[in-house]
Length: 488
Image (cartoon, rainbow, N blue to C red):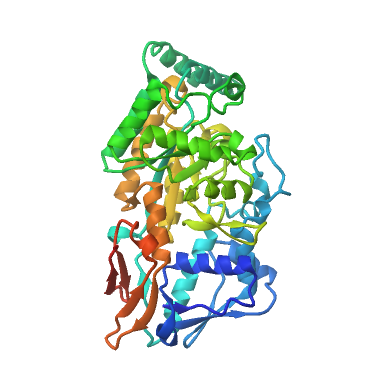
């Protein structure tokens, strides 16, 4: 249980970052009468030495926090550095762009420090948690269980439906890619596989293969669907290549809905230039599914940081899942967790949450030149293990068009392995919307008082608690259950 400092002397982005760190720590925030019994977080002045900054950015040796009886001292300079990372100043308007208009990954602070494969801010949050417990002494100390059903970490499987028609054209592009790499063996294998499928529907088979793998472990995933209107120009750009109202897409949507998967919008490139397009595309998707579309991920991961997310929020989306790298895998924001999106131009948090992904199949096959699907899965599981260590969220992207007929032999079996492994490691497997709802509700919980028997009096925001979908467990430092907060 922790009492936060007066936020008056802090910059807005520092207040935002501190709230995100404490949220990720799982510590119960004390307010009202409970503050007198909680550990006080104290921000200390002073310059951040090069060694301390390096320690913060080195996941294996995070900054050591000073603990005193009833107090936890956090250097404000550490908070400032964390704010620079979380609010992604390095990805702003001045950052260099790649050919798709995305901020290049090499401009990222964590990439420059070669620690992007560690959730460094989640590790700092874990350090805040451990130091608070150490400073509590005889004081009551409460934490909130990180995820529902006793799960210690969460994994969200997500899929971008980029291809749904004219599949031979995409096979041709894949053949060109393999030829450029000199991978003649794989190229010949793809040619043979595609020739035998000309009269079949490999797109639907690819989707079914993904869903069949997930149903074996009872997992439900999130699917992002393009809802623009295809044109010759959009096809050439690799953007909108199918109509969401096509028979094939309708059949795919029917199975997704029947089996309880989430459907979100895959924002086309025109939404980057014209945020007003979000509302039209969202309405088009909702007309097809008959349910609200709460999540969005940008096609090609293209966005103007802050501007695009503001347009997403204005269009009614609850969360975005575009934050991640295209050409490598890792934790772009430093957090393996859900957090409110920061808008540098307004100096405040937006009304939309970020559910960042840390792993994508094509980051390896396309950008890293790794054509072995089992190596993709090894990479995914390495990052999953680091998310598990901090009790955080692992979110991955698997494209359902990664099938033999479209140039990816061995990929379906590899994905089935990923699903089995995540399940066997005890992750809470849930769609992104469920993850975001639960985490936003957990964030609202506060301890207002503590009884003589050591039971906290809890309050939370009713408007988000009623959508959480599962209750919350509050435990003491020994892990003993002290309170349960049920959803209304």
